[in-house]
Length: 176
Image (cartoon, rainbow, N blue to C red; front, side, top):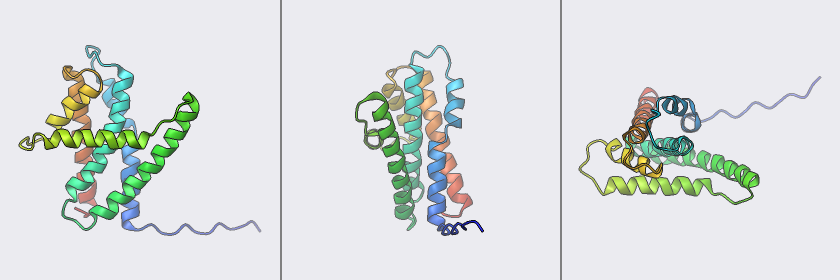
């Protein structure tokens, strides 16, 4: 008889939701979709746009949790689970990249810095109704093309889509 594997412990609703949100944050299909629609007229370096889109998506998921669960008791445990999963992912990515290029990289610090930059930009303009109006130009600037409307719109689309999909997910689970 072969050795039997112990059953995996059942995940809590918070763990399942956190894992789903983490998987969504690192999934790349929407990034590929946006990249194929970035017009050739854009002056932005495509590799930079793609890199920044992934960062924006991850931090938009985390930001969305705080925003959509602002007064919920689930905000802290779900956010903590999500960010801990992101930290593990970032550590693996940092280690792998560091080995490949021979230089230490702290991808989690990059994520924290970008989140802080976007939040500061939003805090400087509290009267703006749609955060994507602030995110888009910041995103384009990070891509080295602050004046490029195509890059601006690509970042705005990623942010709007991510925030909307997180809200819909939370509503479907009745967590919001």
